[in-house]
Length: 314
Ligand SMILES: Nc1nc2c(c(=O)[nH]1)N[C@H]1C(S)=C(S)[C@@H](COP(=O)(O)O)O[C@H]1N2
Ligand SMILES: [Mo]
Image 1 (cartoon, rainbow, N blue to C red):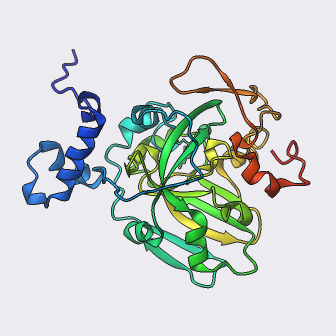
Image 2: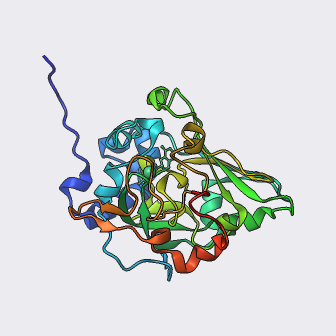
């Protein structure tokens, strides 16, 4: 017989969100010697304790739609390195060590260099951007992300005239991600954007959500959010950004090119071979809602694709 001796209830579930945040930011601000709470004594627990961000710029690029809850966004995830079910990443990424962390920005740039997360956090003013985010599996969420335009980072390294695309790579280590052997996709997880897509102000280098640093299951410590594209383009836990001259492979296209393309723009008129893309289910809602062209960002991004056949370039 299996006897459970401890039951873990996230403090976010037993305490109102505002108190929870204050309590955590207060505790993480104290030097380790002052920490009394047992969950904060283990190094991994402390490494992953959320840090609260102050002084966020409210972005004019935000949607005014109702936001999903922190719980929705942190317990229903796609992060195949930590399991292929929606519930696994929140459990299996708990002790994923996301500090210290370095992101290398390299390739066709005049000034390649490595950035620590602290350096990334100081590179540009942090904004809160409330975005619609739609998974290719036809669920969607609305999330207050925290970060700044990826273009701010790319400009720092000065892309050369040969740079036409950007390649992104996720951290990968089977020792820390044992479930990754069952992922069924090639790893490390890689993604790509055309340079003009990557430079578009909507493309967000993301370090937080809901006022604090990202939970591991949502791609800590730094990920991409590309709100007009299907969710798999929004690569998590980045370690490499490489400017390149030709179109890079992306994981889902490499794994099944009939179902997943390079562009992956949200498009209600181009169905996935196994299901319609004309509508979607917002997490927490029952009735399906129509999917919008470019996920509702057509006014801003449609010009990137003028003259392109979006059925061919799906
Ligand atoms: N490294 C990595 N990044 C990833 C994935 C993944 O499995 N591994 N899943 C993608 C998919 S399919 C989606 S829908 C989003 C989900 O982000 P969220 O869990 O923060 O909602 O992450 C994307 N980024
Ligand atoms: Mo997705």
